[in-house]
Length: 120
Image (tube, rainbow, N blue to C red; front, top):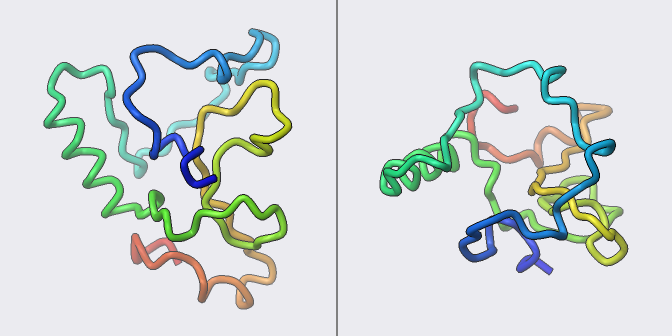
């Protein structure tokens, strides 16, 4: 199932239909607050080498593309996965995510990724 991760997929020229939600189910982006600490990468830039370098730097700095944490086991307390339930969803979420339990913090934080150092 790790092959289901967006980061493992090939190049896409357009958004695959499996990820297109009806307008009424889409997030209201005007309600989202930007975090200045998260790198923003323009994937539409014509400079492919710059995109690759920026993504590689974000992976090294933020460490969220750590495939060793991949699991589709819904009971795991820490896992990297994609969408929510790819076996049952008719429309998937266009994302990979890192799920970390954090309460009580002292029971979980030791197992969290060590990149970036400030994450823990």
